[in-house]
Image (tube, rainbow, N blue to C red; front, top):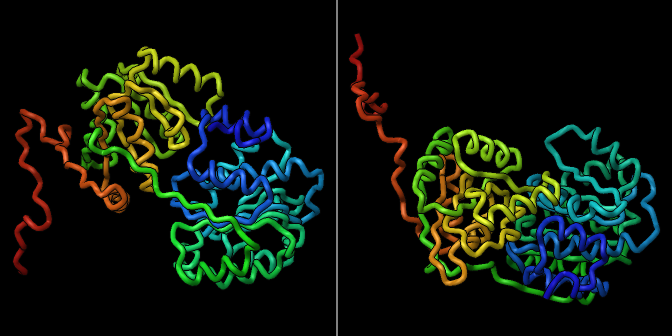
Length: 398
């Protein structure tokens, strides 16, 4: 199945092609037809399964087909997310997917000044991504109106419950029109979330997918415990081994991908970066060079974890550990394909140990701890090592 088979409009198909996506994920294949047919929906899915596009694509298609514009302070589609990070992630996805459409979108969350958010809302918004607390605050100030909402998404409802946002969510729901299409996504379905679903949805369709898994038997997984400032040196040390013939390196940000690729080139390695800020032609050239073996190292962000479809990737290196463990599964799935054995390295600095624990819990695999060659004291260095605080002798009081 392709996105064309799902009946999506050409502007959305162009955006998907720009991002390198050709095949829908299971949650997208199951949910999009129901949503295009105007059904309410319950989606049981983890993060990292592609659920954002599963609800964003049908909503964008519906909004583009309707010539109605949002009034001042009005909103046509509302997406509620529990955290600032998730809200920004959803907003970025909506921005990319709607790039060939004339739609307005905005994101609002607490912890920052409200004035830029208020200015964006004043013009009227087609898609608003919001955290409940900030949205409720702006509603109470009369700075946003929800009586024009035609589409509602409650994302990660179980996290909303865990974080104590359900009461705020109910206050927001009370201000919405009854005639709307509503979607609720949750990794689990505790009693309180199930009750909320019954209250906010009308005869919903239910789709459920399990987190993507990989055949870990085909992938050797290793972790290097390394300081942030030592990661690049470790990477270059590893790349000194010609066995790392075709390598995908994942960073957390686009800026980080650009910087790392540039540093590798300066160090004499054949490398390029691929991410959403690059033009489609630039991305295609980089991917073609990588497939042809002309580029040895491709530095990428998570957006392109699925789009890199190269059978001969020998190694995947997680330069930065992803925030979501499911993203790690997508990343290492770029190697160990077509019956080959692949190798995945994870660089874990002290601040990322929680991410590592989440990865090991999800994959049910304890990553083998590898040594960090660059952290060894250089030969010929006769300086005595500085003892740790535990090793330092206590001074007697005078």
